[in-house]
Each structure stands twice: as C-alpha cells, then as structure tokens.
Amino acid sequence: MVDAFNAVATRIEVSDDTLLVELADGRTIAAPLAWYPRLTHATAKERNSWRLIGGGHGIHWPAIDEDISVSNLLAGQPSAESQSSFKKWLAARPKSNRNAKRSRAEPGAASDSTSK
Image (cartoon, rainbow, N blue to C red):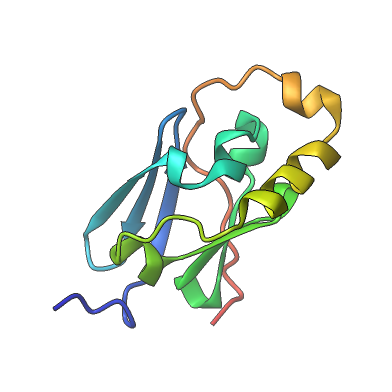
C-alpha cells in the first residue's frame, strides 16, 4: 500500500515530456507531461516557476494556475480538468505564450519553504 498521506515533494523537474518529482523519502515519481495539459502548453519559464504548497504535499505553478498533489501523482491520476475549462484557459493565454518556444526545462525552481 502506498503511503500518499506522508509523501512530501522536495524537488521538481519538468522537461518537454515528463514531470519528475523527488520525494523526501528518496522516491522519485515520473509522470507523462501529457497528463497535465496546462504544463504541456506552458513555456519553459512558466514550467520552472513552481512552489511547494501544503508543506510539500502539492505543487503550484502560479503563471498557469496549475496545482498537482503528490498523492494524485502516486495514485497515477492525471489532471481532472474538463476539456471546456482547458479550452477556455488556453484561449485566454496571450499569443506570445502560445507561440513561445518550449525548451527543456532547467531544474532548481524555488520552493515555498514557509508552507507547513
């Protein structure tokens, strides 16, 4: 049985096709970026601008208004956002963001160390 309640993220890396989350207990979770359409359509800068929330139980990307919980990652659950919600979000994005080149993301984004 997976202990998702006590799983805490410590480091995040987002590439063009994978979300990698390192946990405090030494495990690493990898999920296909295709599971998270907002991350898929984000620029490298937006992908790298994340913070840990809930003491590391979740990850938030403010620029794209995306939240992913560690427990959902461990359970293998992709984004539950509806197609209509995603299409509305995508249409509202500035054209410069839609056309920006998405290069391989660099690791090492800042985390929110004040969350508990």
